[in-house]
Figure 1 (cartoon, rainbow, N blue to C red):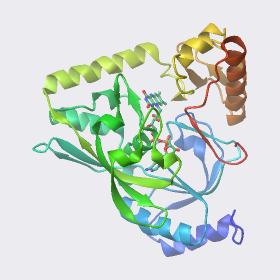
Figure 2 (figure 1 turned 60 degrees about the vertical axis):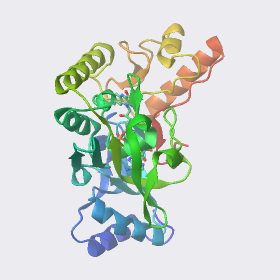
Figure 3 (figure 1 turned 180 degrees about the vertical axis):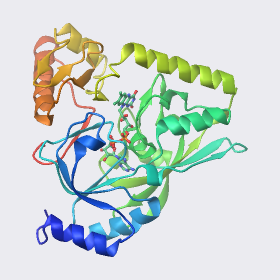
Figure 4 (figure 1 turned 30 degrees about the horizontal axis):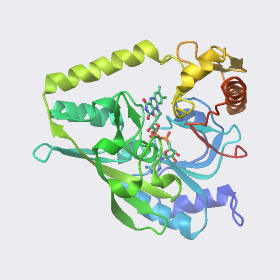
Length: 311
Ligand SMILES: Cc1cc2nc3c(=O)[nH]c(=O)nc-3n(C[C@H](O)[C@H](O)[C@H](O)COP(=O)(O)OP(=O)(O)OC[C@H]3O[C@@H](n4cnc5c(N)ncnc54)[C@H](O)[C@@H]3O)c2cc1C
């Protein structure tokens, strides 16, 4: 993988240097994406926050390629897998601290939005109901400025704790993260979210829980939750809805291999049956060109496409 070392050499070196961390060789990424698609990561690891800092420093110093992911709910991973180290911030980096008096929550990057939202509800803090059904981590949500039902992370984020490429950890205030529709400054200037402080407001527990239940029902009703997917495949083009354009172009149910434009919600591509990344990419290409042909509007992907030979 590396210009000097093979993946086996890097794997052995990492195991030796970070003996308390579990590294996996050739780990299938389909096990770590909600699309259930993706070839092997050369090396896969789920560190804690304190393990992440020295690990990243080592990878940077030795120019070993890596990527940080969260719950894999917005990822399309190449069938040929991912070169280098995939660092997944998950269970070991998922503590959530609620400060009821100050109406705020500090969550580590691997905490699931659903868990943070439910803790907020239990503590009578309002503001995070919109995030309850988004199947991502706090880190992925900051990176993507995740949003739904009229809310987005931008509205509740006070600061994110960011580890930059030089190994420095900083509290970056929301204004400096340039959050807008499915966009953050982290997309252009790599930095890794270690945690986030969310500013909420006192509210009524029953009302907060009722809103969360209402959103859950809407998702069950409208989204193809019984199939693997990565949520909305395309971004909303200005002035349009991607799902409606796709439907109006006659593409409801359009299929390539095992991938399909959902019959239930045309904005979602689903993994209907053993789809490959190549199926999804071809389908996305076809959908974009048919929508463009009909309406003169291009669709750009919301899902992050990563791995070997996809860009
Ligand atoms: C059924 C379904 C419904 C969905 N509904 C919504 C919705 O309503 N609204 C919405 O916005 N999204 C939705 N999504 C998409 C997805 O859940 C969000 O984009 C979510 O924020 C991704 O978080 P993640 O932890 O899964 O990130 P991943 O998919 O693992 O990663 C996404 C991107 O974030 C980067 N990243 C992840 N963690 C970090 C970190 N700690 N530091 C730096 N970069 C990081 C990754 O490198 C990658 O580029 C949905 C997905 C599904 C499957």
